[in-house]
Length: 67
Image (tube, rainbow, N blue to C red; front, side):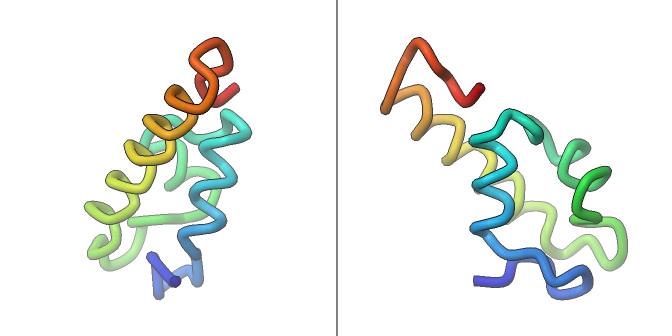
C-alpha cells in the first residue's frame, strides 16, 4: 500500500528501512525516502508504521530490536 503518494513510498519500503535500522524516526524517513516532505499528509501513517515495526521487531527477537 502506498503511504506517501507524493514520493511513491510504500509501507513495505518503510518497514524494511526500520528492520534494517536505517529509520528510527520520521526524520530518518524524510531524509532517506522523502516521506512527509511535500504535502505532509503521510506523516502520521508513516510514524505509526515505524512504531508498529519497532514493536514487532522487539517482540520477535528482544535481543535484536531492529538492528
